[in-house]
Image (cartoon, one colour):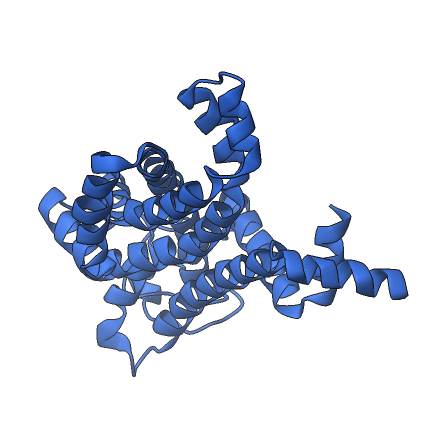
Length: 286
């Protein structure tokens, strides 16, 4: 933990990413207590009101409090992001690890037919196609993003397993009679989790952006549940007469994506052995 502390003290982007991520998670968890109003309550008499003491971020076209909707929209985005990363990461890690360890025809089928086939198409277009086929709804959005996102984790896990399975500790475990399942679960998987963790952190940003995109296109989260993408879709016709209903949801999406990208980049740098050696040397010379 001291190494992580040294890195975050010296990495400005890492500190900002960690701070933004913590704030975002805190706001999402505390949304029911922080929201000043019901996010679905309509008040047509106060529609399109600008920021004021009563409504810090103004109201939308139906008079709903934008701050409350952004706070509850953060819960939706974080829930979708965590679910997608967990589901896609688990599926990709299992498939890629098996392909890399088993090799042979199974590896060729998984790598050429499955992984390359999914990665050859833009992920967001596949997600839109699956979401349109499955229909709107938060569960279906998660399923669509998991189906289109597992291939990246599988490719990374396969590459790491192909490299790690020839290491001395794996050969020693094999010579001692360890079963393939034990070698894979006890020796290989724990040693390839670091790059997968980095990709999962950056994948959170991609999942949040993808959910906002699907909701913006009308195939994502169903109304009246607040969603940043749906809020941007509702605000399109009021871009010039009430720009606040566009600015605040867009800033929320930008902050969330930026937070997880900065945190993922910081974790990737921290897990680089050369950078960690540099941090140790600089800390000893102080």
